[in-house]
Image 1: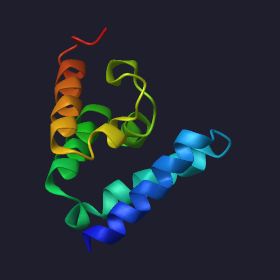
Image 2: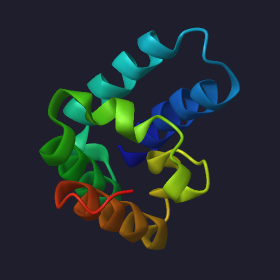
Image 3: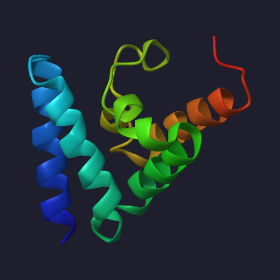
Length: 102
């Protein structure tokens, strides 16, 4: 089942990286994917998504699917695909939640 989640995630992230024309629609798709696919996600991605939801609520997908200067301009979910990258994103989310984000 993880393969289906990964395929959907890759498609959405690739489209977000290449075009911003349908950004709102793609972020809505991303929000639905992270909301309803927790059982299909690798554990490190599920942890990032849960933490992003705790910090940003309904705007979690916007944070996860938008480039971030603290991550060298990459999208948090793109970085979080590797366990080490997920730790970087979780650290960033913790700093944001404590107000230590500049």
